[in-house]
Amino acid sequence: MATLPVSLVFAFKNRPKCVITRAQYVKEATDLAKRSNELGSPTRRKDESFGKISIQELVFLEDDVQALNEAFPQGEKADTSWAVTVLFSLAKLVFGILGLALSVIWPLHIIVFMLVNPPAFPFLNQVFIQLDSAWGLLGTTAFAIFCYYLVMSVISGEMHSIHPMK
Picture: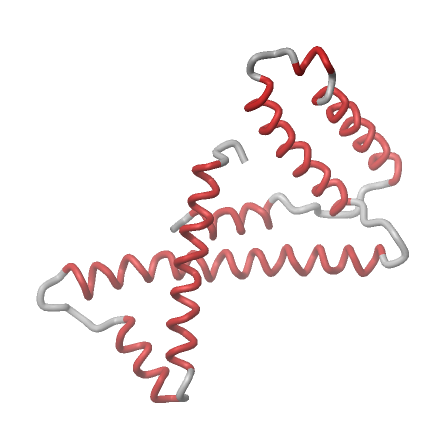
């Protein structure tokens, strides 16, 4: 359950800090173009391990292209694009911290309420009941958020096991 919040916090940590210059963009884009050409070269295709290595390198190349586009927004609304990039980075940090809290609360609830016989404390059950008594759908919404987070954590963990190099 830790892969989702950790990856969100690392995404914030590794965000572009400022817009790069045009010269830096051209240099980076040229390097990416060279890497792209190397992936598609005929001598490379004859290699036996071409399939697995090229897929990993292709994923890395796509990530680098995306990072370059984030660091150097282009077009008529480049300032708006940069502002959105900054806001998404901050949102990743906030959701990473909230996810970390949820990742601690779920196992704690399992230990306190389900593994101890009789249950030591109703913990999340009581929280959801209190939220429901405050407003009809608040407890249900909170429970849905917890369940959705659990599903997203499982999917995130599965993606890391499928693509361990990513």
